[in-house]
Length: 249
Image (cartoon, rainbow, N blue to C red):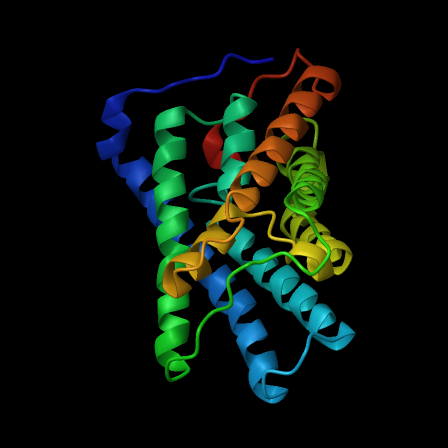
């Protein structure tokens, strides 16, 4: 494992770090606005009807497309994490300092909250639905879902965006990341909403002030991300390659 870096407190005021945090804020805002907005649009079109397979497909496509764009537009500035769990995975793998990670986490959560507030205003006061567990799904079932789905997401990030040997495959990293999230929503959306992203869960929870089982949507993604980063770094990364700078992630 590469050495985990804490970083210097001076990073908090460094121009590049602040620009990167702003890029994360904007990318998450774009992603959450489209993803949560698609759910609100579905509810409006169905008069708040019950969930349907069509709604699940709509959520999968909206989140997959929006994440592809959000990662792409942030890649050259912040690395396009768009997810506190991805940032944590980058930290575990030694690709970002703890100080920079903290700034990213704050920016990502603020981006999600602002997106949900904008949606509430734009829709005339409609609430963004908080993530919740489906009937018959326990917190432990949901925790496993979030761990496995986020493992797949962060493993994909490492394989297509972080690995020094990625070569031309890095070109398709944003779309690969969007596709794995869309696929995971099809797999887990009916059970726990398939968050894989603590910021995505945080915004609706703040705006609706509903925190039921919210810890699952933090612990699961962070565990899955940490495991994926450790597995890729220890068993699959060639130790002769230099660690890539954060800006290229």
